[in-house]
Length: 309
Image 1: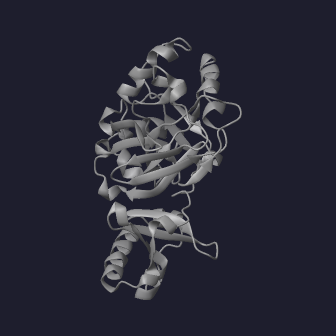
Image 2: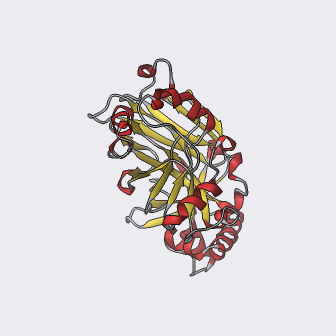
Image 3: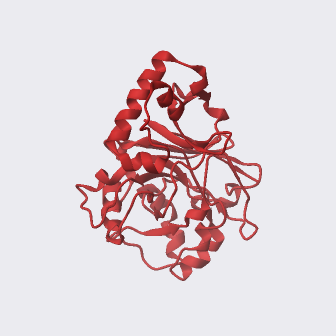
Protein backbone atom coordinates (compact mmCIF):
# COMPACT_ATOMS: atom_id res chain seq x y z
CA UNK A 1 0.00 0.00 0.00
CA UNK A 2 1.21 3.48 -0.86
CA UNK A 3 -0.09 5.80 1.83
CA UNK A 4 0.67 9.43 2.60
CA UNK A 5 -0.42 12.50 4.58
CA UNK A 6 -1.94 15.68 3.19
CA UNK A 7 -4.09 18.59 4.30
CA UNK A 8 -7.74 19.09 3.41
CA UNK A 9 -9.10 22.62 2.80
CA UNK A 10 -9.90 22.89 6.51
CA UNK A 11 -6.26 22.27 7.39
CA UNK A 12 -6.88 18.80 8.81
CA UNK A 13 -4.55 15.87 8.23
CA UNK A 14 -5.93 13.30 5.80
CA UNK A 15 -4.63 9.88 4.84
CA UNK A 16 -4.45 9.24 1.12
CA UNK A 17 -3.83 5.97 -0.69
CA UNK A 18 -2.22 6.14 -4.12
CA UNK A 19 -3.92 4.03 -6.78
CA UNK A 20 -3.49 3.47 -10.50
CA UNK A 21 -0.45 3.57 -12.82
CA UNK A 22 2.29 6.20 -12.23
CA UNK A 23 1.19 8.28 -15.21
CA UNK A 24 -2.35 8.48 -13.84
CA UNK A 25 -2.11 8.29 -10.07
CA UNK A 26 -5.33 8.88 -8.14
CA UNK A 27 -5.42 9.49 -4.40
CA UNK A 28 -8.21 7.93 -2.36
CA UNK A 29 -9.22 9.85 0.75
CA UNK A 30 -9.34 7.01 3.28
CA UNK A 31 -11.39 9.01 5.76
CA UNK A 32 -14.07 9.97 3.26
CA UNK A 33 -14.36 6.45 1.86
CA UNK A 34 -14.39 4.74 5.25
CA UNK A 35 -17.07 7.16 6.52
CA UNK A 36 -19.22 6.42 3.46
CA UNK A 37 -18.71 2.69 4.10
CA UNK A 38 -19.90 3.15 7.68
CA UNK A 39 -16.57 2.55 9.39
CA UNK A 40 -15.91 4.65 12.46
CA UNK A 41 -12.53 3.23 13.47
CA UNK A 42 -10.27 4.35 10.61
CA UNK A 43 -7.22 5.97 12.27
CA UNK A 44 -7.31 9.75 12.00
CA UNK A 45 -3.58 10.34 11.56
CA UNK A 46 -0.52 8.53 10.25
CA UNK A 47 0.78 8.16 13.80
CA UNK A 48 -2.46 6.45 14.80
CA UNK A 49 -2.39 4.31 11.65
CA UNK A 50 1.14 3.09 12.37
CA UNK A 51 0.28 2.38 16.02
CA UNK A 52 -2.69 0.25 14.97
CA UNK A 53 -0.39 -1.96 12.89
CA UNK A 54 -1.92 -4.85 10.94
CA UNK A 55 -5.44 -3.99 12.10
CA UNK A 56 -5.22 -0.60 10.37
CA UNK A 57 -3.68 -2.13 7.24
CA UNK A 58 -6.39 -4.76 7.04
CA UNK A 59 -9.15 -2.18 7.43
CA UNK A 60 -7.56 0.11 4.84
CA UNK A 61 -7.30 -2.70 2.28
CA UNK A 62 -11.01 -3.47 2.79
CA UNK A 63 -11.94 0.21 2.34
CA UNK A 64 -9.82 0.46 -0.80
CA UNK A 65 -11.47 -2.57 -2.40
CA UNK A 66 -14.93 -1.25 -1.48
CA UNK A 67 -14.19 2.27 -2.76
CA UNK A 68 -12.79 1.09 -6.09
CA UNK A 69 -15.95 -0.95 -6.73
CA UNK A 70 -18.31 1.94 -5.95
CA UNK A 71 -16.13 4.76 -7.27
CA UNK A 72 -17.41 8.08 -6.00
CA UNK A 73 -15.43 10.94 -7.63
CA UNK A 74 -15.63 12.91 -4.37
CA UNK A 75 -13.33 10.37 -2.72
CA UNK A 76 -10.57 10.68 -5.32
CA UNK A 77 -8.12 13.43 -6.32
CA UNK A 78 -5.49 13.46 -9.05
CA UNK A 79 -2.12 13.06 -7.37
CA UNK A 80 -0.63 16.24 -8.83
CA UNK A 81 -3.29 18.31 -7.06
CA UNK A 82 -2.70 16.85 -3.60
CA UNK A 83 -0.94 19.16 -1.06
CA UNK A 84 1.34 16.51 0.43
CA UNK A 85 2.85 16.69 3.88
CA UNK A 86 5.96 14.76 4.87
CA UNK A 87 4.70 11.16 5.08
CA UNK A 88 5.44 10.74 8.79
CA UNK A 89 6.13 13.18 11.60
CA UNK A 90 9.84 12.50 11.93
CA UNK A 91 11.28 12.23 15.43
CA UNK A 92 14.89 11.50 14.51
CA UNK A 93 16.48 10.84 11.12
CA UNK A 94 19.46 8.51 11.41
CA UNK A 95 21.44 8.68 8.16
CA UNK A 96 24.06 6.23 6.96
CA UNK A 97 27.17 7.61 5.32
CA UNK A 98 29.30 5.99 2.60
CA UNK A 99 27.00 2.96 2.76
CA UNK A 100 26.81 2.06 -0.94
CA UNK A 101 29.90 0.33 -2.28
CA UNK A 102 30.20 2.27 -5.53
CA UNK A 103 29.51 5.61 -3.85
CA UNK A 104 32.20 4.91 -1.25
CA UNK A 105 34.62 4.06 -4.06
CA UNK A 106 33.90 7.26 -5.98
CA UNK A 107 34.58 9.51 -2.97
CA UNK A 108 37.05 7.61 -0.79
CA UNK A 109 40.19 9.17 -2.25
CA UNK A 110 38.87 12.69 -1.72
CA UNK A 111 37.66 12.17 1.85
CA UNK A 112 40.76 10.25 2.94
CA UNK A 113 42.71 13.44 2.29
CA UNK A 114 40.44 15.19 4.81
CA UNK A 115 39.89 12.65 7.58
CA UNK A 116 41.02 9.43 9.22
CA UNK A 117 41.03 6.02 7.55
CA UNK A 118 37.65 4.46 6.86
CA UNK A 119 36.43 1.13 8.25
CA UNK A 120 33.23 -0.94 8.27
CA UNK A 121 33.38 -2.31 11.80
CA UNK A 122 30.25 -0.28 12.61
CA UNK A 123 27.98 1.76 10.30
CA UNK A 124 29.10 5.32 9.69
CA UNK A 125 26.22 7.69 10.43
CA UNK A 126 25.03 11.15 11.34
CA UNK A 127 21.81 12.85 12.40
CA UNK A 128 19.56 14.92 10.14
CA UNK A 129 17.56 17.29 12.33
CA UNK A 130 13.79 16.80 12.07
CA UNK A 131 13.42 20.55 11.40
CA UNK A 132 15.17 20.06 8.04
CA UNK A 133 12.60 17.53 6.78
CA UNK A 134 10.28 18.87 4.05
CA UNK A 135 7.65 17.42 1.74
CA UNK A 136 7.73 16.69 -1.96
CA UNK A 137 7.51 19.70 -4.32
CA UNK A 138 9.08 21.97 -1.71
CA UNK A 139 11.20 24.87 -2.97
CA UNK A 140 14.64 24.71 -1.35
CA UNK A 141 16.95 27.74 -1.49
CA UNK A 142 20.57 27.19 -2.37
CA UNK A 143 22.30 28.14 0.89
CA UNK A 144 24.22 31.39 0.86
CA UNK A 145 26.93 29.70 2.91
CA UNK A 146 27.70 27.12 0.23
CA UNK A 147 28.43 26.83 -3.48
CA UNK A 148 29.05 23.05 -3.34
CA UNK A 149 25.35 22.12 -3.11
CA UNK A 150 24.96 18.39 -3.66
CA UNK A 151 22.16 15.81 -3.95
CA UNK A 152 21.82 12.22 -2.70
CA UNK A 153 18.87 9.91 -3.37
CA UNK A 154 18.45 7.49 -0.47
CA UNK A 155 16.07 4.72 0.62
CA UNK A 156 14.46 5.26 4.02
CA UNK A 157 13.00 2.74 6.46
CA UNK A 158 10.20 4.21 8.58
CA UNK A 159 10.28 2.74 12.08
CA UNK A 160 6.82 1.74 13.30
CA UNK A 161 7.46 0.31 16.76
CA UNK A 162 9.93 0.50 19.61
CA UNK A 163 13.18 -1.32 18.98
CA UNK A 164 15.88 -1.54 21.64
CA UNK A 165 18.89 -3.76 20.98
CA UNK A 166 16.94 -5.70 18.39
CA UNK A 167 18.65 -8.49 16.45
CA UNK A 168 19.33 -8.38 12.72
CA UNK A 169 16.94 -11.31 12.30
CA UNK A 170 14.09 -9.35 13.90
CA UNK A 171 15.03 -5.84 12.72
CA UNK A 172 12.60 -5.58 9.80
CA UNK A 173 9.71 -6.37 12.15
CA UNK A 174 10.12 -2.81 13.46
CA UNK A 175 9.69 -1.27 10.00
CA UNK A 176 6.32 0.17 9.01
CA UNK A 177 7.37 0.95 5.45
CA UNK A 178 9.80 2.65 3.10
CA UNK A 179 10.04 6.05 1.46
CA UNK A 180 12.42 8.27 -0.54
CA UNK A 181 14.93 10.79 0.80
CA UNK A 182 17.12 13.45 -0.82
CA UNK A 183 20.02 14.04 1.56
CA UNK A 184 20.97 17.54 0.44
CA UNK A 185 24.50 18.49 1.42
CA UNK A 186 26.71 21.57 1.56
CA UNK A 187 29.95 19.81 0.63
CA UNK A 188 32.30 22.73 1.22
CA UNK A 189 31.02 23.02 4.79
CA UNK A 190 31.01 19.24 5.19
CA UNK A 191 34.65 19.10 4.02
CA UNK A 192 35.73 21.45 6.79
CA UNK A 193 33.67 19.58 9.37
CA UNK A 194 35.05 16.18 8.36
CA UNK A 195 38.57 17.54 8.76
CA UNK A 196 37.54 17.79 12.42
CA UNK A 197 35.96 14.31 12.20
CA UNK A 198 32.38 15.59 12.53
CA UNK A 199 29.30 16.26 10.39
CA UNK A 200 26.65 18.75 11.47
CA UNK A 201 25.95 22.02 9.64
CA UNK A 202 26.82 20.68 6.18
CA UNK A 203 23.89 18.27 6.41
CA UNK A 204 21.42 20.38 8.38
CA UNK A 205 20.85 23.73 6.73
CA UNK A 206 17.16 24.72 6.31
CA UNK A 207 15.08 22.35 4.15
CA UNK A 208 18.03 19.99 3.58
CA UNK A 209 15.84 16.89 4.08
CA UNK A 210 13.20 16.36 1.36
CA UNK A 211 11.27 13.20 2.26
CA UNK A 212 8.37 11.41 0.57
CA UNK A 213 6.17 11.62 -1.33
CA UNK A 214 4.47 8.75 0.57
CA UNK A 215 5.22 5.44 2.28
CA UNK A 216 5.17 1.99 0.70
CA UNK A 217 4.10 -0.32 3.53
CA UNK A 218 6.48 -3.08 4.54
CA UNK A 219 4.07 -5.87 3.65
CA UNK A 220 4.87 -5.05 0.00
CA UNK A 221 8.66 -5.00 0.58
CA UNK A 222 9.73 -8.35 2.03
CA UNK A 223 13.30 -7.68 0.83
CA UNK A 224 14.35 -3.99 0.74
CA UNK A 225 17.61 -4.88 -1.03
CA UNK A 226 15.66 -5.04 -4.32
CA UNK A 227 14.63 -1.35 -4.18
CA UNK A 228 15.81 0.58 -7.26
CA UNK A 229 17.04 4.18 -6.95
CA UNK A 230 17.44 6.97 -9.48
CA UNK A 231 18.02 10.71 -9.31
CA UNK A 232 17.68 13.22 -12.12
CA UNK A 233 18.42 16.94 -12.32
CA UNK A 234 16.40 18.74 -15.00
CA UNK A 235 15.67 15.33 -16.53
CA UNK A 236 19.34 14.29 -16.76
CA UNK A 237 20.15 11.09 -14.89
CA UNK A 238 22.78 11.64 -12.20
CA UNK A 239 22.39 8.54 -10.01
CA UNK A 240 21.26 4.95 -10.55
CA UNK A 241 21.60 2.08 -8.12
CA UNK A 242 20.17 -0.88 -6.26
CA UNK A 243 19.94 -1.35 -2.52
CA UNK A 244 21.84 -4.61 -2.88
CA UNK A 245 24.95 -2.39 -3.06
CA UNK A 246 24.44 -1.30 0.55
CA UNK A 247 27.46 -2.18 2.69
CA UNK A 248 25.31 -2.35 5.82
CA UNK A 249 21.79 -3.59 5.05
CA UNK A 250 18.67 -2.17 6.67
CA UNK A 251 18.59 -5.07 9.18
CA UNK A 252 22.22 -4.30 10.09
CA UNK A 253 21.64 -0.54 10.39
CA UNK A 254 18.51 -0.99 12.50
CA UNK A 255 20.12 -3.59 14.75
CA UNK A 256 23.22 -1.47 15.28
CA UNK A 257 21.45 1.82 15.94
CA UNK A 258 18.74 0.24 18.07
CA UNK A 259 21.33 0.27 20.86
CA UNK A 260 20.29 3.95 21.20
CA UNK A 261 16.62 2.95 21.21
CA UNK A 262 14.39 3.47 18.16
CA UNK A 263 10.71 4.36 18.23
CA UNK A 264 7.74 5.05 15.98
CA UNK A 265 8.48 8.09 13.84
CA UNK A 266 12.22 7.52 13.61
CA UNK A 267 13.54 7.06 10.08
CA UNK A 268 16.68 5.28 8.90
CA UNK A 269 18.26 6.64 5.70
CA UNK A 270 20.33 3.92 4.08
CA UNK A 271 22.93 5.89 2.10
CA UNK A 272 23.24 6.80 -1.56
CA UNK A 273 24.53 5.19 -4.77
CA UNK A 274 27.32 6.60 -6.93
CA UNK A 275 26.87 9.69 -9.07
CA UNK A 276 26.93 12.55 -6.56
CA UNK A 277 28.44 15.83 -7.71
CA UNK A 278 31.47 15.72 -5.42
CA UNK A 279 32.46 12.36 -6.86
CA UNK A 280 32.73 13.74 -10.38
CA UNK A 281 35.94 14.77 -12.14
CA UNK A 282 34.38 18.23 -12.69
CA UNK A 283 32.01 18.62 -9.70
CA UNK A 284 31.39 22.33 -10.29
CA UNK A 285 29.39 21.36 -13.39
CA UNK A 286 27.07 19.15 -11.30
CA UNK A 287 26.42 21.08 -8.08
CA UNK A 288 22.83 22.27 -7.71
CA UNK A 289 21.89 25.81 -8.64
CA UNK A 290 18.71 27.92 -8.63
CA UNK A 291 16.22 26.75 -11.23
CA UNK A 292 17.19 23.08 -10.99
CA UNK A 293 14.43 20.48 -10.58
CA UNK A 294 15.60 17.40 -8.71
CA UNK A 295 13.63 14.16 -8.89
CA UNK A 296 14.72 11.46 -6.44
CA UNK A 297 12.99 8.18 -7.24
CA UNK A 298 12.61 4.66 -5.95
CA UNK A 299 10.79 2.88 -8.75
CA UNK A 300 8.68 0.73 -6.41
CA UNK A 301 7.60 3.78 -4.38
CA UNK A 302 7.45 7.03 -6.34
CA UNK A 303 9.16 10.31 -7.19
CA UNK A 304 10.22 12.94 -4.63
CA UNK A 305 10.46 16.31 -6.38
CA UNK A 306 12.49 19.28 -5.12
CA UNK A 307 12.91 22.68 -6.78
CA UNK A 308 16.06 24.69 -6.09
CA UNK A 309 15.59 28.45 -5.85
